[in-house]
Length: 130
Length: 130
Image (cartoon, rainbow over the protein chains, first blue to last red):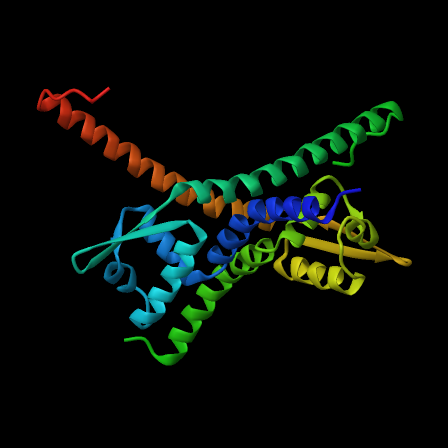
């Protein structure tokens, strides 16, 4: 049996592992934030460049930017009066990998199932209905 | 200038396009829901099988299941007293594709930038610092 300290340490470790994905998927769940990410994949952008195509106030854009930065998907740097924002690809890759691995597990299982059914229909001499 | 009707139609179209991704990423932003998805990628599962490893009440599990079903990532079917839940791969693939395409755009840009810098350093006769 684990003592409370160990349990807490394990939980903390688990939370540290899952929290970046929580924040990444949360950040990507909003269409405005996805369009900001999309803009930045084509190159670094100033806050006004990010805001330009969006029908919202600058404070609203900055709020979305804060969510993106907190998720680690984006970082920004202010030089003089201009804040330049760019993609941080690590978290984007983590989120992609999480989905890709689950999709691959699902597809492998589905392929195995298909193979088993094909074998069974061969064994019983039943063809697949065209 | 677009009349209000056309603008509404366009907005509705845009919302229809983005809403599935909103809901998919929102559904994946919770570690409990991700662990339920993970379980289902290994095969269909009953609600009690999904609930078994989770330290929460059955109503809480059902609430998470509803979010997953609303996102289209999962569907469930009740036969007799058992509700069986399984992955619907279409939305999972859409979410993966959205990230993969943005990541690819970002990487292509980065590669081009690297090629330009390499050309410049060749032209000026400056080697890359080892």
